[in-house]
Length: 129
Image (tube, rainbow, N blue to C red):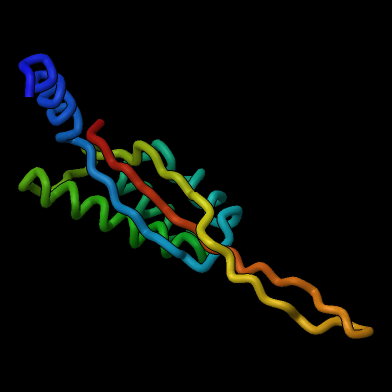
């Protein structure tokens, strides 16, 4: 590896030192419903976001809360210390479509209605403030 390429790789590694992510794949909930909850915690401090998710009435909030706890644990493992209040924030949270289960439901007069059971993938990135 050349010197310039090595220096660039070192700078990128240093920039990513404070950033950690977690992924949750194939969540059996529609992406539209999940995005409603994801928009609620995007850009918020992590312990405040955990409080918002814990007391939310949305079903998708439990999945995002689980993912956020995982991302915090990943950050603590990577940095070798405990996360303190006001130190981490939810930098980005993305909800992407996952493969759909397609089913047919019987309908009147010999027809069939298509049922699409949607699912999604979540990616959450935490960063220091």
